[in-house]
Length: 503
Image (cartoon, rainbow, N blue to C red; front, side, top):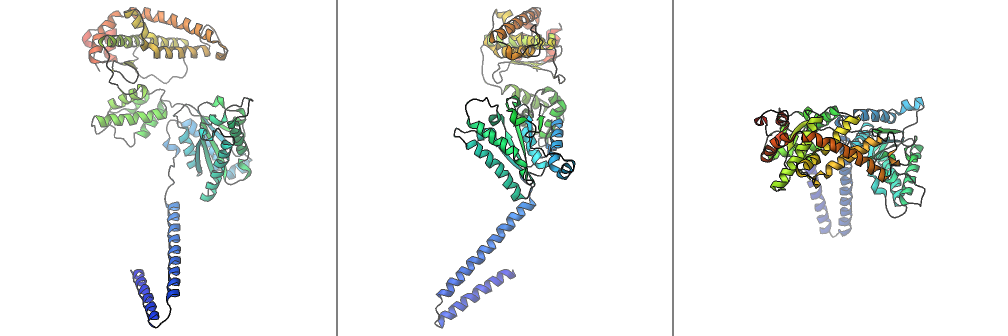
């Protein structure tokens, strides 16, 4: 209030002085010009002071955007522990200097897509209180010679400058999909991304010429085997950390993290969903929770029910339900095809079928959902052969009832061929221990045809004994479109038809 009054008095006094000078005959133009310049200088100085104050307040008062802690990342306890141990070399600089430890230059994160490699890099920057700069490998590949190498230089320069301006002692550079620029050099003609790789190697070698700021390079790839040996050697990427798909405990942790901002019904069982989502990545689990919330919104529910979570798993695995309508003949063929899968699964692995569905979803016109099993990472020959027989069950059922197959078995055959390849490369076939790269296409075709033909005959012989089960469950599946695993097992074991329970 006093400041405002003082301003008004000052302006009034100035105007009065100028009027008085003009009245007595003094030329006032120079005075007016000097007053205008003085006013502009005062405004500029005050504006600059306000701007500096605003910047200072933002620098000291607010948390940097995008910060992420390791506690907010689920399902990667071993990878987080390895990464934290490596980052401690950057944090505890006095300790590593006392012991004569060379600072780490790079950390390579490898693993399937969607497992959280980018999140780990962001958490690493927050853990070390470092500047975080990110880029993708594709950003450095250009058709013009020297552009990629120049961008590598600019990336490291930017990290150093940002660290110095922010008063940080270190910076973390994250390069995603580094195999794009770090692939093996074949010794052929000079290529643009060879220059880019050479520049990256040079930058990594020269990272610690200055003690501050220290720069740590974290890179991620799904194809570690494609990287050049000069890039992954010790002294450049000193730590190779495998970021695998989460186990059941990790999946439950991830689901719990993504459920924090979502209302769950008291009957919703995330542990059950963690069991059913074997093989899901962290990104897929996040999608499951998101899709479940969408289903709850469609049903106008206040909370996410267990059925919404189950539907979300089907959506992530196979896609959304479609409006495709098949003829009566096609629906019967599809029903028999899915029943072939279900019966084969129950015979080779009792209690495994959860639901048999005829509703189209994604590219599939029907599907069989299996009950969750314990996480398993080693497979025997008998187990893999059983998996192939389950995959061939649909085609075998079509041959039994129609005398031939349809194009609906294409995906099943792809799955079966993949299992055969796994068995060959694991030494579980009559070929014994063999290098898969030494196999010719004709040899692959021969061993695959032999194995699949033998297992197809075994599957058909097994299903031929279950014609009554096919016929007894076909009408209900056509009418209700879904059949529960419990009801299906009752019919399989010879109980009355009314024991069947549609889902």
